[in-house]
Image 1 (cartoon, one colour):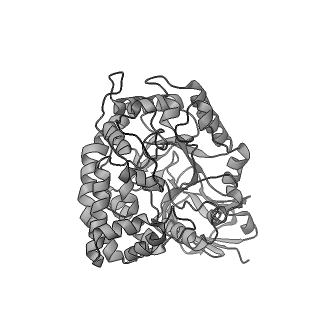
Image 2 (tube, one colour):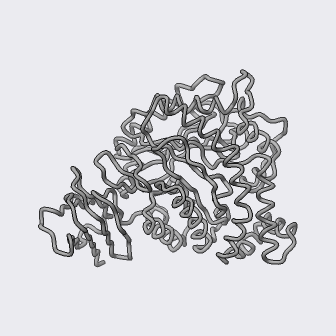
Image 3 (tube, helix red, strand yellow):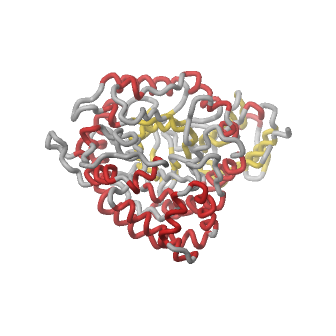
Length: 481
């Protein structure tokens, strides 16, 4: 599949609107892991076949810089060979792939991501109780991130950002022609260095002022797992959530403009030297995951998409206590950004339900939201025994794959699925996928308000195919269970 951008839509090589649904596969390796074997994922061909059998079509495949380039400009052929094997397995399963330069806390020395030689800091790293708090509390993480964003020179005299761009050019040159690869997610959740605690402090101060609390006390409460959910409930007031985001937006816009955009422009230029057409995925910064306006700047390429992440802030709490309202506010902010930029959206990460029970309502709420906005997505994330989880069951539902034309709407409602689109004269059909439990579902198709001829609608296993053509098409599927 070859994708290009048409305004806010993905189009394939046939001109069809594409909706992508998938899962993250990321083998991060342990902190301080070394050697290619430490970064090999434990999924199998059978696991990939299970994902495809759920109607999923895309994998966001994590690539760890420390594994790719353990020494400056020296690429690990064993790890690259493993990546090649994963692409072959995905292609065999009918799954497309977005390569994702993954990081958490920037470096393999602190979490996962950059190699030691690109981790430029004078400070010792002390892990925090909640891993992500390291962005806020660790001088080592903050200094190393600042060194990356300012392209500080590594020991070989080359900037670490230049090394990162060269690594991406190598990956694009090696894998860009692989039939599974559809694009490149340039950097997972770009995060400020020494600005991070200032931004978080501004968020806390804005919330404290809203609710008449001491900022110091509110910060202490957020650091206490027993109080965090209670304090997060203060953001169930959407107008309040918006006002806090608006107060902090300028800080994120400054980070985007002065740090992220120049670095991403360098990376895009390096990729485009060897691959002129694959999708470039641009994420917003870490703090925009919580509902602050992203301030994202378009990269210097026409073929790109916006890849926001979003979690209610209870995501790292066990058991999860996610709020539909807070999550909707977070994604409404991303929707604003999409409209400003007029680009397609693929939500790179959402969910993180793991093996938790009781997540069906929240999962369905988010899926319905994404369907309403015609957003593509990749769920976070596959784990061993994923197939037996409630999350996997929630993801397994009717979905569009391709519209020969342009979608107007599609939605799942219990045992019913409906889609409406404006058809076009193309050389490939409209495609929908139905779960195994819908094998006996009644499917009805109307065109311009009239029943269609039998030869315009076909079913083959889980696939429903509609012949291309002009007109207003309406599909109705009734499972009747």
